[in-house]
Length: 204
Image (tube, rainbow, N blue to C red; front, side):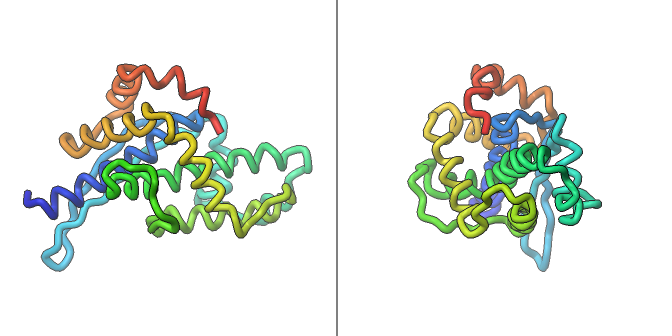
């Protein structure tokens, strides 16, 4: 594997590791992650997929990003449910954006002082924009124009804790090497770094 292909693979690994670590920061778990190598027009491309377990938030998540995603659903929610739905939206939006944020920091040699805006992977961006749109229907004092910027600011504060970036870096290197990690291996790594118990401290 030459440097260019290796670099693409490592960027994809850091991207997925960002999703995973922020999933745990937000109280979720990851059942596994894998990288896939594809060839298009003689070009080798790497992509990845993380299997996130959203636990008790699964119902709202299915309405936000699942096959039955529908803004009309949120218009029917009782006002007492708006805050909970909005909290879920903010948590999963961080998980979606974390991949591109981790990739940008990786490209900046691990330095979290990055310039915004950054490139966000298209599917993650589509999902976050839907969340943004849905939140406007929840009447929760939502600032649609500043939504993504505010999320990145909040996420960078979490990354000021050195162990958070170290976890992303550790998983990224492991995933680049193995191309596939199951949930038990992920949690063994995080437990070994003594990070899983501390994740509740950073919960959004």
